[in-house]
Amino acid sequence: MKRTTLTLPDELDTELRHEAARREITVSELVREALTMHLAEADIEQLR
Image (cartoon, one colour):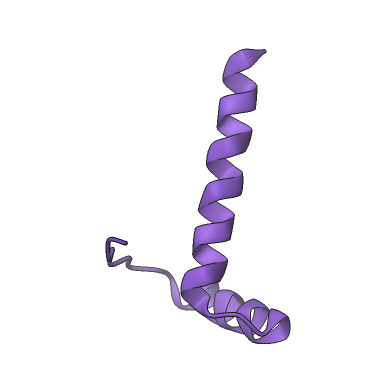
């Protein structure tokens, strides 16, 4: 697995950390899930 560094606005970082804690997963896992879902949706849009 590759490591990537992101710069996020404070508000987005806070939201990510709260959501990850709520779901009892890491921020990294939450970001991976979000990116995977976003890219899958983009693929579906291209098929239309």
